[in-house]
Image 1 (tube, rainbow, N blue to C red):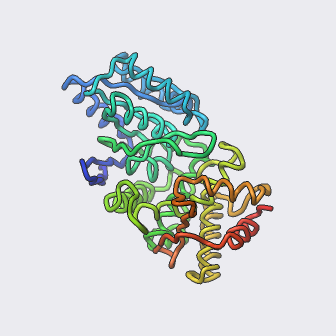
Image 2 (cartoon, helix red, strand yellow):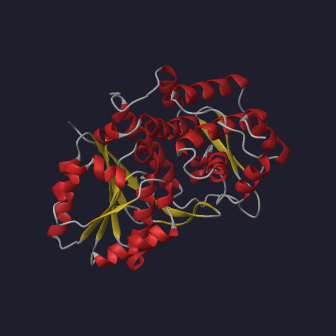
Image 3 (tube, rainbow, N blue to C red):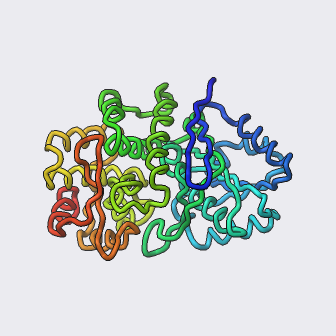
Length: 363
């Protein structure tokens, strides 16, 4: 089966994202080439992926040491980051070494940040094994870990040398995890591509067997790559890469207050997308009908559109103020001017944000 390819262009380099089915042998070929040139390679994965992709890991033999971290968001921690660094040192990686990040967003963020930091930066390859990682976190070079104050508050921009998105790997995903990934697909349609949103509205994608998935993953990578190419380090005064945070200021607050792991990332973002739509309507940009359409698309992709249990508004607001997108004490929000076009706003009335939280089930 043919492989699709998206090229990400950054200020310092460009690299390919390979999208296809059964890419294991293609990836092994790249590993062989790197080793033939003298590169030491070390892989980082999590316990779920290590089990689900056991045959592929076995094919590596003894040539590539593998560190298996516990599955779940709690592995994006300072202590686990230290363990990965110690593993890279024990694996004798030098500056020509390559870190292989095989897993979802947690592994990609953790191993990518370790690659960015070890010896002040070594190369790494992203092998996303979840839909969320394929369409979002593996594209664009953001790496990082969580601290008690908030999610992704520590990290670095560090671009991979290649990404391998193998759609076949999604067949081992639990349905809830697959739905979580679709939140970012919906987000991309809402912020930049109405045609993508229309496709999801007309016929939801609810499982990895959907034959449109390869094209949709490629489509999402192109959307994200185009945004990243124009604003790699999120420094644009308005718009730019910050647009990719649509729904995330709300969603990250939900994750923080509910406790990481209570909501999957995409589940929190599902609620966040509805909140962003409500904010956009309140500010006069989109109509109530648009909010209804967004709520329906989120719901039909098996994602929550409101909080499962009430969370305290005061704590949600406090978590928002800790968000890494806050500048000079002002919370930046991403709103939609229409479905398919987003913009950043520098602030919103506190009472309005509290009211939107209430509409989403907070108290």
